[in-house]
Image (cartoon, rainbow, N blue to C red; front, side, top):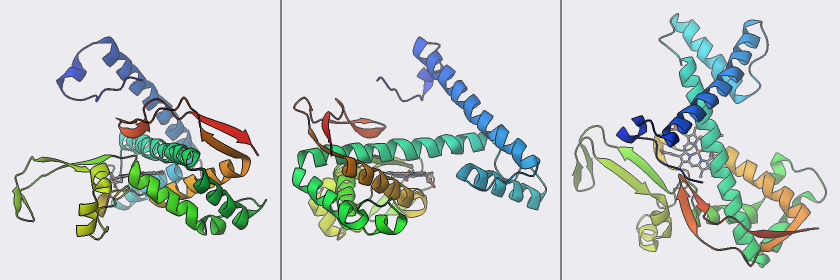
Amino acid sequence: MVVSIFSGFCRFLPTKRNQRIKAIAHEVKGLVKGIIDKRVAHMKTGGNSNDDLLGILLDSNYKEIEQYGHTKFGLSIDDVIEECKLFYFAGQETTANLLVWTMIMLGQHISWQNCARDEVLKIFGDKKPDIDGLNQLKVINMIFLEILRLYPPVVAIPRMIHKETKLGNMTLPAGTFMLLHTMLSHHDPDLSKVTKGQTAFIPFGGGPRVCIGQNFAMLEAKMTLVMILRRFSFELSPSYTHASYTIITLQPQFGAHLVLNKL
Ligand code: HEM
């Protein structure tokens, strides 16, 4: 797959690729708008809107507009479309990568795979996984944290400094572009010692913009891994080539070649 960062002057050139990017963006916008329009129409006829994230977002937005009596408060439909895209992208790609790296590592370290499966069988047996049980998964939680340290799906966090800021003994002028490199921070034992690990481990970012989906992501990943471990044992295929590669998120460059055996 070829991906480019769609920014800067080049994006205005009418190349074949740019036209395709625009056409896809237009199609995605139309699809998301279709979902939103249906939901808004349902809400206007008094239907329940509050049973999923989009419903909660639209509901709270309408309340805000109503409270201030003006549409300049609250989100526009374009904002809601962007929020939907952000949630899909931020939530889907990242968690999928966490699971893929976990499968690769457990396919290589079979004793850890067995240990994780033993824990699943001990906690759930044949029962359907529930929240209480998922919260008891200590080994699997530990495995995910180690995978997030080694292969953080978001490898770096960009920031633009808006006004002159003092950081330690540095003065950063307005307009400075900074990149907090999650992956380097996770792999640097010295940094970890200095901060006692507290701010060196940042797979979900930190501060006011910390990932709002982190608990959901861990729960979703646990649920998926439980279901896989109960049904299959797996190992790395000899054709697997280890190469981490960033296409916005961190992915195995040549795919995750695994051999699954039904249990
Ligand atoms: C393993 C899974 C995930 C990882 C590693 C991850 C990582 C991150 C990171 C590092 C940030 C901070 C970006 C920044 O500071 O600029 C972030 C923000 C965000 N994440 Fe996640 N994320 C994950 C799953 C999810 C899920 C499942 C959702 C939603 C269902 C989600 C929604 C968001 C949103 C909306 C933001 C923006 C928050 C804001 O700017 O206030 N993420 N995520």
